[in-house]
Structures are given as structure tokens and as C-alpha cells.
Image 1: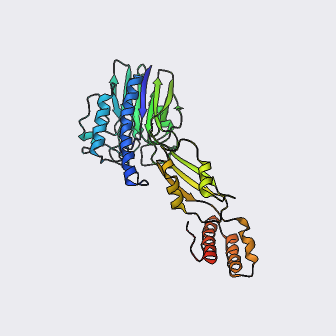
Image 2: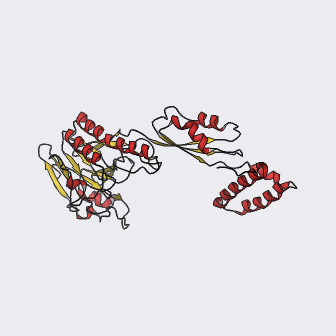
Image 3: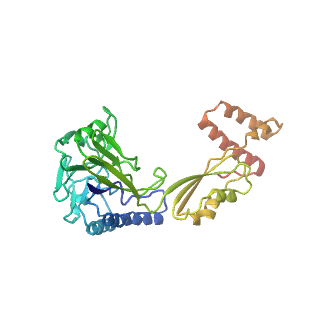
Length: 367
């Protein structure tokens, strides 16, 4: 049996465009700190090898500090490290993987042709291949099927799992191709969530997911995998590595007079380290001062977004029967609302809010 540490999709030096620049810079530094935790985990678990399946970097340009952090982490790891560059950090002669003076126990796969590196004292063969541009043909199409499985064969690879006959530009991989390899374990990168261990033929495979979320499409715990492989079975254990998480939350304002109190009541404990997007929902006709609300709650989060998804009360249309300017306006808008699709209705609701605010208070409704 061998023990592996499988990670991918660190996307170091991500821009974090949705955050203010000061917090974006902090997040990039926290990404670098992932490398030190990765090294500590590899040493503590005494793994036989570390497989890094691509997109460690967000692009082929990186900060000097990131190169220093990579070198320090790799020097710290006491076991062989294998890197299979992906579509974001693809290998070429001027890429960081070619320029950095990596330690001898760090092996970067440099070609689309599958390459094997044997660790004789471990009884394992490590395979890998690399993206050499931002798009890649199917790399497993060139994989020589393994017939002698007396040694354990594993592979680090970046790519997109897909259906037979389909196509994508990110190393299209099919279950049939995986089964045909004869590998014991295929360590994949590209998807940013861990889907659980899968099997095709005699080959086990999975994505480790990203070790740190970078947006609201990457919510929840993120980390790496500890993988144990023998001749007949593979097991994985997810280890959380990320320092912050992204969360979405709803706060219903129906029948609420105090918006701040309603939102505060909806908050869980322990939000200070994380990034939240709060959607205000329900039926609400009052003014929503989103900037003031965000400022009032900001110190309870690393970063906070608040979005208005409320709708006007359904009984607002009862005022359409009034013989007033308000009534005339509402009758016209109700007719359009009832005939419109969902997108059109959202626009009409906003128009009603603006107009009623102007009629009642002589000013525009701020949303």
C-alpha cells in the first residue's frame, strides 16, 4: 500500500476582482500560506508522494513572493512531489515551472506525452502529462495501457471528464479511457469541488477540488485528499485546508419593520472569517439603504455583499382602484405585470417602487 497527498487548483495569485484591493492582496497572501499547510500535512502524514494535478498558479505570470512560497514549501516537503501543469499554468520554456530552480525531488511533467517515473523503493510508478498551452487535446488517448500491475500505477493529470463523442478544449477524458489505462488511481485536477471517489474498470479516480474558494460559485469547505492505494482498493479522505469560506444567506423582510434587526437575527455564529452574500427576500415596501446596512454589518464579516431580492406586497395592487394618479399608474402597471414574464415582472416591480416613492415623497426610491 502507498499513501498519497492529492491536491490541485490552488490558483495562486488569483485577482479576487470582487474584493477591495486591500482584501484581495490579503487573500493572495493567504493562498500562499496554503502551501505551508500542504507541506506540514504531507510531512505529518508521512505520505509516499505528493501529486499536484495542475492549476497551482492562476496564470503563467506570478508574483515574486509566490515563487518564494512555492520554493519554501517544496523544500520543506520530505517526499517526492509531482506536478502536472494545467490550462492556467501550462508548461512552456518561460513558465514558472521552467524558470524556478525547483528542488531535485520535485518533478514537473513537461509534455503531452505521458511520462512514467518509478519510485523503486515504494513499488510505485507515477505517471503524468502536461498542458503545453491553454487548450489541450485528450492526453489519455496516448496513454499506453498498463498490463503488468505488479507495481502500483498512479497518475496526476489535469482535465475535463466528459461523455464519449463530446469535446472540450481541456483534455477531454472519458470513463472508457480511464478504464483502459489500467491505472490503480488517477488524481485529477480541473473541477473545484470534491465529487467523491469514483471507479471505471479497475481504476479509481477523482478530483481533489480546490483547496480555497475564490467566489460564490465555490462555497463550502475546500481542501485536499489523503489517498491510500493498494493492488485491489483505493480509499480517500478529505482534509480541509482553506482558511476562509464563501456563503450565501437569505433574510426574509416580510412584515419586518427593522431591517437591520431582521438581518442580524438571520446570521449564524462565527461569520467573522468568511465572505457572505446576503439576499434580502420577502415582501417589503420600505426604503432599503443597502450601503448603510452593509456598513452597519461589515465588521461581522471578512467581506459582505447585500443584494435586494424583495418584492412589493401583493396587496399593493388593491390601490389600483383608487381614483387618483396612484390608482391610474398602478392599473397600467398591473396590466403589464400580469402579461409579463419573470424578467419583465422584476422590472415592473422596480418601476413601481420608484414611482410610488416619487408620488409619496417626491424623491426616487434607492435600491
